[in-house]
Image (cartoon, rainbow, N blue to C red; front, side, top):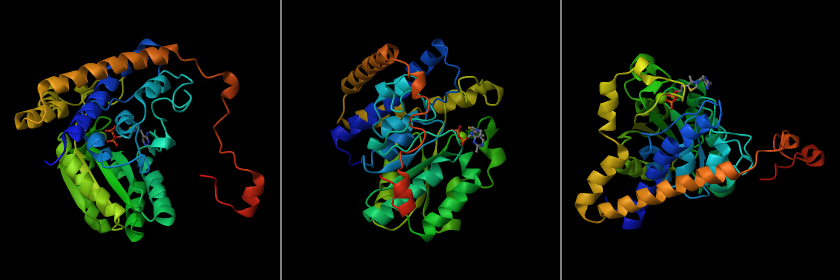
Length: 336
Ligand SMILES: Cc1ncc(C[n+]2csc(CCOP(=O)(O)OP(=O)(O)O)c2C)c(N)n1
Ligand SMILES: [Mg+2]
């Protein structure tokens, strides 16, 4: 591992921010009478953290229904995200999007997404834009789950991205289940990454609880994309700690022993166990980050609570792009 101290601390801070956002923020939505289906990514922090540490604000990501971690890792402000969860006007989508529609174009975050594998065509479209307008300098990452791996649209997109050598990374977060359906039941191969061969692209399978394994594999895939060598498929084996949504009891389809096994491989714990013995980082430094992140979450909840609701007259704002009819007649490009 050849990462400098700043990068190491940043990786830990991002994972801890995701963990606390999920564990502190999600229960708050219930207490405020929000009845929306919210999906926690606690347990899966190493995947968005390791991947997005290789990206800049100019790069793009497409996300899933379980997308808070992707947003945080791509640099979206957690205070604004909390406001979005609470349906407040100060959220990045003015409180009208909620957990499954958080987008922030200033960070290249194309949106969390309620449609399984819906991230994939968006990211491939962004990668095509990058190839046509930016000489592949901007890379797009499509996050999707093991359930998403069986959607037809993914396979169409992998084919097209390979044929056109688009700068995209297909990143499968294989957490073992699609709702209550285990991968062993629904997946035709033992590894999603095996499917890359059918599209003539590299397929990499990594331990998705190990942020360094994810970081290294993503670094290679992102460099390949930026270099104009085309797409890769990266499968990260991970685990979600909580139910599919806040309404789900996971013990109705998985065992407490299995949960304990994966919690024993907790990404934050693994990080500490890897880094501290090397002497570069002290436990105190990591404890200080824990305290900072806990304070940030209190601030985020207070900010969201103090923020106004969107006004009823704004209901139809931001639904359609403002696209002058005259430009449409001329067939001009959309303003981007
Ligand atoms: C196209 C589509 N089909 C079905 C659903 C209902 N649905 C929501 S999440 C989900 C399971 C997704 O599993 P996976 O891709 O493994 O992601 P995970 O929830 O494990 O993160 C399903 C079937 C949906 N939202 N969209
Ligand atoms: Mg899954």
